[in-house]
Length: 380
Ligand code: NDP
Ligand code: GDR
Image (cartoon, rainbow, N blue to C red; front, side, top):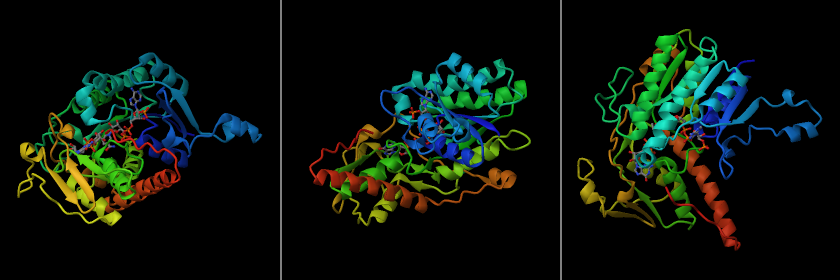
């Protein structure tokens, strides 16, 4: 039985990867952070409480292959202890302060977790003498391309990071390459473009859109506020992308890969697709976007557009100090070397996300209609 350790197991990708590895028969260990409220919702369906198993009268080890450890990427002694105990065959470093806009507000913390956290893990593996045993996957990102130097972006495209998040991930990318070259570690980077799902964090733009529009249809919110609607992204589905993370650690030689769909849409198009799913007719008004579609951030600032009964407003609060306007990946190397192609289309992803958020919104509306207080958190 192979043993895997996942940092960030409570996040979107961590939860899908844990599912995949458990299906493949792995013993899976995950690092979760101590928080003042529960943060394991995405993996609760995978976890079996020891007491439940014991009450069934079976030995624990026969039924549960998922183990959770408290830890943090800022705490090297904790990481070293966990790796020493777990002796993993594969380490997937998915843990991160992963929100680009938040990284402008907490740049030092972002660097500590995303850059130094990666170094701490690699050093722990080396210090414990596991550099020939433990294969290492680093969650690198299309944000490394930032101010793009080439369209589409591939493995050889020069990096130009545009946020504290991307700069921290640049360090993580290169330290992973460095440990591969310096110590012969099987360590590689997946340069993943945006990927979404119904488990996406609520403050990333896709989930914010599906959640907010669903809430509006149920009378729980009045308006969707967004920032730069002209940003272009190459959006895939998280399930396809974690499959590729696993594949990258099963090769003879460690290599870095771009993982993308090769298709690009704007935030505005994502809103349109979600609205179409919900059967909302959109009437665009006063967007402040000029004819060729270039964002004019001054004229856009006080614009609002009414969309039938649904209002979408641009709020400059969501503009970033430095924006990544366009990202489009070329996954040719992943296809040629590993036979990987994405299977889930953006339309299918939107359908899944809208259905999930509509179901949640309907439940909240039902509670509200029956006199229960429903707090729909809007801060994002
Ligand atoms: P999420 O934000 O959903 O999950 C991030 C995970 O990291 C959570 O489990 C979170 O814990 C954990 N985490 C945060 N801070 C720390 C810390 N200090 N120590 C330990 N763990 C921590 O991200 P995704 O699942 O979407 O992304 C996974 C990885 O892939 C991230 O590194 C992200 O930067 C990268 N990436 C993501 C892409 C995407 O489109 N999704 C694209 C390219 C790269 P908690 O649940 O407690 O908050
Ligand atoms: P991104 O994802 O920054 O690409 O990082 P996000 O969904 O946050 O933004 C995508 C684009 O949408 C624009 N935008 C808004 N974004 C948010 N969050 N909220 C808004 O209201 C809004 N309005 C417009 C943004 O300006 C941006 O251009 C994600 C994360 O998962 C990273 O961890 C990962 O590395 C990259 O994808 C690849």
